[in-house]
Length: 262
Image 1 (tube, helix red, strand yellow):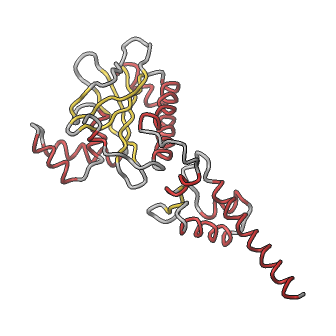
Image 2: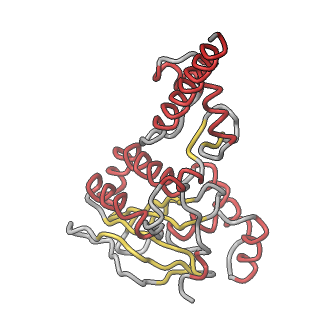
Image 3: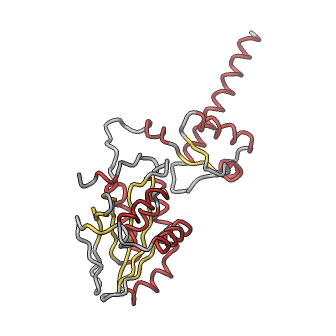
């Protein structure tokens, strides 16, 4: 009889531990950028020790990953096993579509989605504003990589050797390009103001997978006289939308964007 009671008690404790693990995992089904142990323990009304054990279990099983500094946790690739096998992984255009809509609603300006194609970048989707001074969205448009903000931010995501190789193949000022690349990396986005008429301003952000590989970039832009002030006032909202896109995009492995035109 005592053995039966001990077995029942052990099963109850195991069930409680399982419930805690599922509660922790469910907390990550949100737009939150991630959680630390203390933050999550308070949200779930658990002890830090219980929360840490649940997080460790999920990391060991691949459902969560620890950020590089080790202080926070995010969803890992293995959560994709929980979805229906009949659901096809979205391509970058599909991943970005709802966030393109959000950026357009926030700014009212043109928004573009771009992938890399060798030494160029190609526009694959976007929304064109109906305001005056339109920043044109022409699907299939091809640009030099070191031209618009959306191309520059993708080049900045490359490694230094590849960037040096790119500079060597083009008539560019090596020091100026490297300085700009470092600036883009430091701030996490690229901004380009075109000096020739019409004077347009665009800002672009990289979109990466969990391994830091490039899906592509997303940009928003418009006439400098209107967009400069607007960008300053709305930048935090724009960054929040891009951060949400990156959290979703990191769940899907990036294809080699350079093959997009092949």
